Image 1 (spheres, helix red, strand yellow):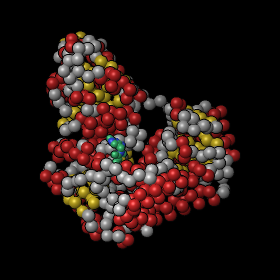
Image 2: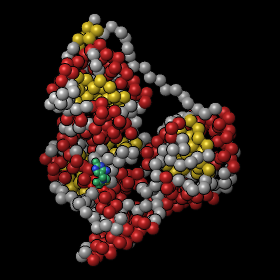
Image 3: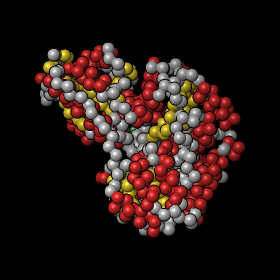
Image 4: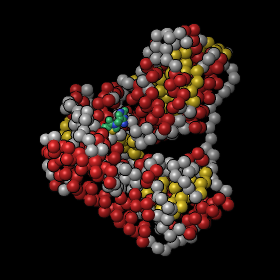
Length: 570
Ligand SMILES: Cc1ncc(C[n+]2csc(CCOP(=O)(O)OP(=O)(O)O)c2C)c(N)n1
Ligand SMILES: [Mg+2]
């Protein structure tokens, strides 16, 4: 039996569970798009391919199912690149259909010819071209299977003459996946338990690998009287319903999370691959458990490393550990955590000033958001405030670009989350720099009827970089943003749009924004001098800030220094 390759590709995507394909049509992609239109897969018509890749990763992360993006040859499929790097690092199962010019012209610098294998080879779990029509089903299966099994992005390069060809299609290649249960052997569990039993001050540090292991980890912490710190990516897995939570360490963490790692004598590292080595304890013995054995000991030397699924391994550890009675270490850090968060939020409260701090905005949205909201944050201050001040619940999930650290992911990722979860509230916390980068895809929210809620933290600058430069002792350079009224622009684009700058209007505005049935953008003029205060002020950044202040005063910018002091220290 023979079929067009375009049809074989689409059928295989359906069989692999793809429900939505995000992209922009054109030339080499047209026949595949036509086959999608007659399949069970929906086409989501984006304005920029990069936004399509972010949206697809949102869907893939929240559902765990394979999600597709497809682009025309050359620039069309090239535009996905930043979202593909982001998705691959976040382990989102994505398949990219990168269409290509005809095979006869490949290698001759043909118009729109791009060597996708060279470009996507370094940021994918699979990257290959269909070389003959008869390879079509097998290679599409291999690509889908790699994305699902290895949890990442598979790139399938499809020359246009191949998708138009007939192929013999009588061998039933199909996608097969399974979820094995991985657990260390008993002797290794006994060794891990011996470390934990002999520790006086045990702390747990959990990352994104702790998903679904919440109850087991909280039980273990109760037995060990261990504070639980988490990475930013571990927030939704660990921070809710957790009396032992002490927040995050790292530059965006708080003092309590920092001290838990710094002061413990035994650290149990669970599904965490936190990269910043200076925040690991200098003298404690570290027991690390991770499903990926290549993560063991790669950030910091460890005493023992075990490979295993976190839930299964922690459950197997529990009967092996002895109950501790001394709660001093735990109590001190939990108390400190609550004090620190309360003092940050109180300092940012409007009664102290008439403008709106980004911290206060976050706290108000947190209070008014749904129990099961899906929240995305742009790289920059929105992601810091989201991770520090948003309250975790059992159903809420948080998405930030923590590994790749890209700007502009919040709004487009929200589009894909909303497509995958039409009945849930989806909130994007965007920077004014971030939203402007992929602004055109606000039109996708309107056209595709995706009722996402976007809050723009309009501080008139690339705030995070402004802080970075100051902490290096520099006067901020090239960080200023001359913005339009984003609320009015959003309205003109067909969204609900509004701008607020007065603190006494904020709660009512947030209420109306969240209650609006369609896509809605609330632009909030936030204070421009709020610093991201690290958990401990080290000599370097403190000296940098002092140097910046001195330079700013000498340069006639003393008002900026006064505002910085008012917004952060008074
Ligand atoms: C694509 C990209 N370009 C540049 C950067 C460097 N960068 C990180 S945060 C940031 C500023 C973000 O500004 P904005 O979105 O306004 O957020 P703010 O920090 O002001 O709240 C920049 C330029 C980046 N991470 N990603
Ligand atoms: Mg900004």
